[in-house]
Amino acid sequence: MHPVSQENIYVGEVANGLPLTIPVYRLKGNGTGKSVYIQANMHGAEVQGNAVIYQLLEQLQTLELNGDITLVPYANPIGCNQKSGEFTLGRFDPITGVNWNRMYHYDSQLPKLMAEQCAHLSSGEIRNTFQHALIASIDAQLEAPAHTLSTGKRIALQLQQLAHQADIVLDLHTGPISTQHLYCPEYARASAKYFNIANVLLIPNEFDGALDEAAFCPWWQLKAQLNALDCAFEVPVEAFTVELGSQERIDLSAAKDDADNILTYLNYQGVLQDAPFYPKEMTRYGCMLSDYKTYYAPMGGMVEYLAPLGEPIAAGTPIANILRMERYLSETPLHTLCADSDAIAILHFASASVNQGTELYKFFTNTFEL
Ligand SMILES: [Zn+2]
Image (cartoon, rainbow, N blue to C red; front, side):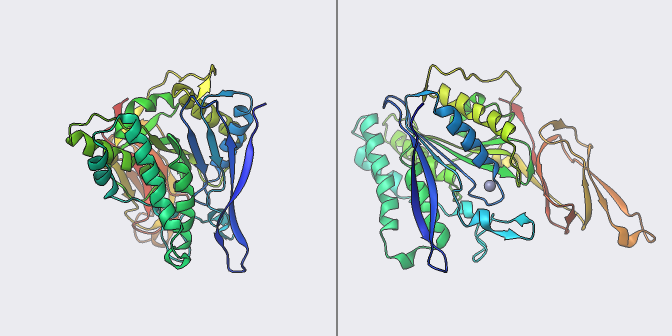
């Protein structure tokens, strides 16, 4: 069995002075392959990634590894404990309202500065120099006086420091009620077919605070800056947000499939040695981020969700019934909403009662086969 080590990293303190810690599991490869960082549960209700990490650990111990693998369940020790009645909240810091997955760090000046300093070096030297610079910029913030960091920022920086040490970064999330989908940077489009995930969102080189972006945007920007200086350089890092399905749900058999799916991608990347994981033949649909449309509830009411998730539907297909019983005698109490274009429903709101303007669905539109 391949040995696994555990370290609990300290990421802050709660009001009674007790430490906030996150478990970090590590498996060492033979040093010839890419290194991997996988975290789960940054959003409190999105628990399935912890089960996927369990299934990954069970399998990775039996495999030969070329690269080092770091696995971090319970990445947000506040989020998964943020309950209200029966439900887990944990998408936003309850004090500031900021999304927990929008607090990672990006120094937008660093790629340009480093490109100017490094353009004469080899790709390998540029890679090492820039990776050190990224880690140093995180260290500098963590070493600053404690009063300069918010709770969420401190957690994010600790995780980002681990992520920057890897060549491959996977952030495991779920939607509210959702089909599996993958956030994939446009430059890594060819890698998307090594995940057995039918719906792939292609995202541009824009930093919006999330971990996947924090991992790849600096490198993508560095490549652009170097290429502008006539220096050939390819992005050496791939980072994805893997949306596993619905929140508030642990399914160990689905988690085994999800783990196999991740192992298939890692096998393609040469992280595993002689491992029997190959991509499935399946139709994969791509959608540009600008074509990922939010459909807000056009009226308040009680919702029956009708759109099948993850499958193409035609314009005009009914997607929801909205029931408004306060006007049963005065007007029609039942309204049917229909898709206004061809689309794939990816996720919908988790509750059946909605205000006018609640985010009801998210749809891929203008899809294409990958
Ligand atoms: Zn999430």
